[in-house]
Image (cartoon, rainbow, N blue to C red):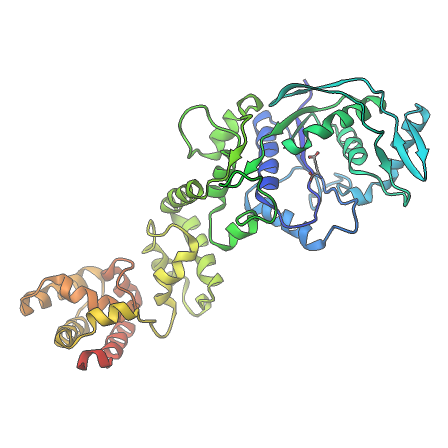
Length: 440
Ligand code: GLU
């Protein structure tokens, strides 16, 4: 058997959408499963609709999802041009093959392909055997302006690139008899096709580029983890045939077989994606945690460059397992990196009240005398103060936390105090004690 060669063949006309990313993913999974090659081919023959931004969105989206291609644009070596706009001469050459075989004719300036008009059966790996009658008008393969039509260049490239398997959206199933006719006329063997089910919105309509949540970039911007999005996309038409939904990518690669693809349309389920996101986020640790959190904090405009690497590391460590989406981090841990704390008005209403004034003053004094200024002694200092005042520790914890972080919830109090350091903590407590709420 030939080594598998699969391709993702997007047209750069918009952003990379969920359906396109899923198509790329299934091709990539198959290539990795079969030890074959995953090729990126840019179908940019429609100059009027292509944009450079769309091209960049494809590269960025695939890389973000970890779907590195083995051949294609931007890959080193002599892997040849993988943009259709650079392949005109190849198409001309194959057109001559069709001319020689008498498969084409001119019709008012356009070149048409003469269909053999025999029924064509597509032996699809997902849809099974589907037979199409061939009684439509002959398809155009070249426009009067000399540009080629999608069907022709798509087939020529699959032939030239030795593509063995094509995973693509079910909306292309009805194009496939045309493609098979072209393959035969060119003297080539069609690849095995696997037409994957469409992705539907929760309301049952077909998900299109314009639907909310359809752009891969929107997940990146919202702080989703690529491993969570990728795991989720795998479930849109594939399953491991047991009830697991969260699986390491290595295992999905191992289990991925075209026979395991669903025929049923896949409903896009944001709740499931969010659940997976939460699971992956909770598991983040070490360098990956640092990298994800730094990016989310920087994206929110927090001036990380003003802090030492050790300080940032320690601050982020206190967020481990505590957030679901990267975009929650600035609210959760932004206080580490701001000059002023943004006080939560509800917390102020509740905790910055006259009867807490002395309690906070006493806590401040205990912290000022605390040596060393580290989590355990700080905890002991606060507890001793609570005992002296005859209150529970929680009574001191809430106003203290609010004063130093601005919020009533967040990372472990004593650890965050240690990281902020004595100077910042005392300054923030002083600022809080000057709050008018304490003198109401
Ligand atoms: N450029 C086509 C598309 O984006 C490719 C179809 C195919 O995979 O053959 O739909």
